Structures are given as structure tokens and as C-alpha cells.
Image (cartoon, rainbow, N blue to C red; front, side):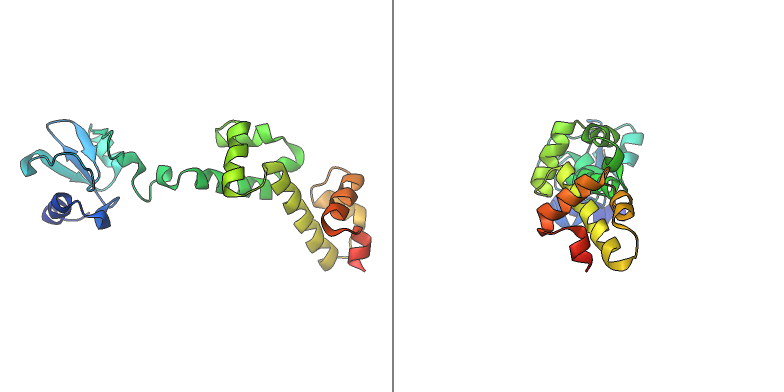
Length: 183
């Protein structure tokens, strides 16, 4: 934690370099803010400083509605929807959609399936099912190139539920069958 004088000078200057590094609790209002908050500056005698938003809340302060300190840089909320998409991609890579639905995936992330589809459209440019299909095909291609497994085994190890779907997806993407690509 920075010393009181450094924090106070950053607060008075509204220095963006200190945003997220400390939080200001205003004793007269019971509110905590970020150093860049545009509200009228409180008197120095009425402020105290905290290293995190959680520490300010634990001390009994509530977040400012203008600067939204709970969304300060480096907090989980600041990362926003990108962190949700990253978690979803990690789960898809682990095979959640190989045996479950998009609704199950969305439920494990704490959001609805329509919202998950919107997030994927914005951040990935494809739907969750399309992303899962692409990841399955990438797994399959690695197995085709790097192993001597039978095509049927590769299809199931890649996450496809049937050989027919595997062959159809493969020919849709590559324009040829998996066995011809292996040769």
C-alpha cells in the first residue's frame, strides 16, 4: 500500500496512473471511490485509503455510483465479458459440448444461452457450437497426422458422437475425407 501523502496527491490530481492501485473511502458519506472519480473532492481530513475495493467494503463503505470502483482496472468485473468467453473456450476445449448442450455450458458460466451466443458472436465471431466443432476438427487433424489410430477411434477421441458426423464435418471443412487427408 502506498503512503497517505502519495495517495492524497494522486487523488487531488485525479491521476489515472493510480486507478485501481488504491481506493478512497470518504468518512462523511460512507462511499468509496477511485482516484479518477469526477465528483467534488472531499476534504483531506475526511478520506482514508484502501488497497482494494474489497477492503473498503469490509470497512463499511459502499461503491460510488459515478466512478464504479468495483469495476476498477485489474478487477474481475473490469475484464468484463472477455473473461466469460475465455472461461467458456476453456470448457469447450475440455469437451463440455462434446457431451452436453450450449444451455449446460451457459449454466455453468452463470449466464443464459442467448447471452452466451451474443458474447461469442462479439468476441469470437462464431457460435459456441461452431467453435466446438472447429476444436474437434483440429483435435482430429492432430491425431490423423500424429498417430496410427483407426479413423473410427480418431472420430470418437476427437469428440464426435458418430463417424458419419465426423466424415461430414471433415469433408465440409477440407473438401475431402479424413482417410484421403491422412495419405
